[in-house]
Amino acid sequence: MSEDLQSLRRTVALASEAPTSDAEVAEFEAEYQPFLARYGKSYYIDDRFKTDQSHGAVFHHVNGLLILGLAPGHSVLRTGQTVTKVSFPANICQSIDKRACKGRPRGPPRGQKIHARSTLATFEARPAASAEGAPTEPITSSINLGLSGAQLIELNRNLATNPSLVSTAPESEGFLAIAKPSNHQRGPIVQKFPFNPWCVSPERYAGALEASLQEQEQLLKKAAGEAEAEAVHPPAVAPPVGAESAATEPV
Image (cartoon, rainbow, N blue to C red):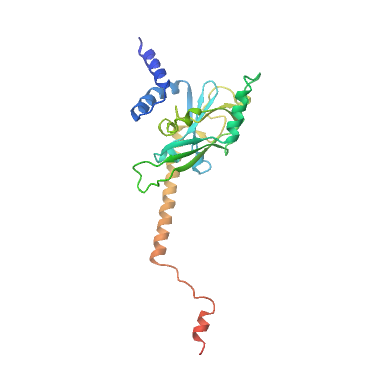
């Protein structure tokens, strides 16, 4: 048996059941990522809106479909959180379920129209065990769709029973949804992502993320310095109106 065939069979075997342990996840990623590289291209959404919700990932398959997930800059991945619950907006679930109940349509599936600022999913997660002073209550966050000109056609229902996949395998088994481009946006993969000008290559995203984190760090240092200076030299408190005249008035 050739090595390529062995690798393909191994990939299929790994994909047949969700990885659970860290070792299984690492093995899955090692086999799955080369498979993805042959059948599409990955993009990240640049932090255009300067919010945690804008850090999304998009895998553009050669068949034109878009697989949506989390980018490394999202707080869930950046701080090592473990997702314990994934929720999709009711309007998206109802739209996709209604379409599925109607059976196979005569024309191409229309799905749920999406917009860049629309919420795709919300998460409840527990903080990383190594985080100092980490809160005991669940951490709530969300992710925006981050792109326009496409329609949602499927949600990853497996996340209802295996939400931690969002943390352990964000670009494979932990994907969030699948979208379909509009008719006028179909075509071969090109260097410039046709659906959103803020979708950039992983290399460009890494540079933008590093610059954003440095900017946030500088702002935090500046705020801490101002607070320290105020503690050392507190501002003078003006006396109440009329207090000075009352003190000088003869009894």
